[in-house]
Image (cartoon, rainbow, N blue to C red; front, side, top):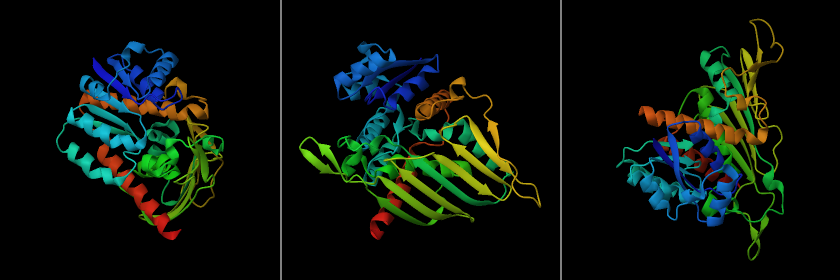
Length: 357
């Protein structure tokens, strides 16, 4: 049996439930323990997901020592510490993105990576959505032809509620960037993924940021929000083409990824994760009608899945893929090196935005 643990259960709506479901896809995986700073949170999580409270650990270090693989689902500023502890124990690690709240942790992570054989994955799970994988395959086939433009809208609306207090996500020392790190990590990964590369592809980027809800209620009164609510990015793509990205954590309408190419227009909507829309063009003619291509051989849960469940379903797929790779002794495309590259790119963009403010 592969023994697994989860650090950072959080609330019942935490991404940790996606990790749990991914583990549950495998008969040879056993959840041996969970750990959270809050005993109450752990017990509530156990009740929500049918997990024995006897699996609640008092120490993250003990769980890391006992497990073969550990999922890290804690706030961003703790990621590097837990990653290094896992690597020191030669324990496989699945870490939520971003890999850290700050690039200052990169040398420490690289140092730990140099002295371990442990396998790793940064959970950039949106690339496991069936419609996104269809877009990747369509572009990889060459049928779309030369890419003219890629545009992407991404975000969420929960934090548009001004009555939500000062969560860790609003504090730069804990979270790092705001919408850029939270949603932008996924967006930059998806751009690389659909283009079939693990390297940055943006040239001459221009990024504008804004914080619209500037204060949130803290324990000692109203406190400033220290990072970005919204980001708008415009850039060129290596090899030609243009790219636009809009990120928002305070209200997002129709999260969508579109590719306009010489021979086809491809459109993916997060609200319809089980399909890809295609407008093909014949030589000498314009684009034809939009046709929906339904994913084949996806798990039944993907068909007509509610948009709110998509991140959790995608997380379960990515965690399941890591288990397959771990069992086979293979390396994941989104390992720690790749996670470092994504963090470095978000920090470059954030610095660029700060310089033009």
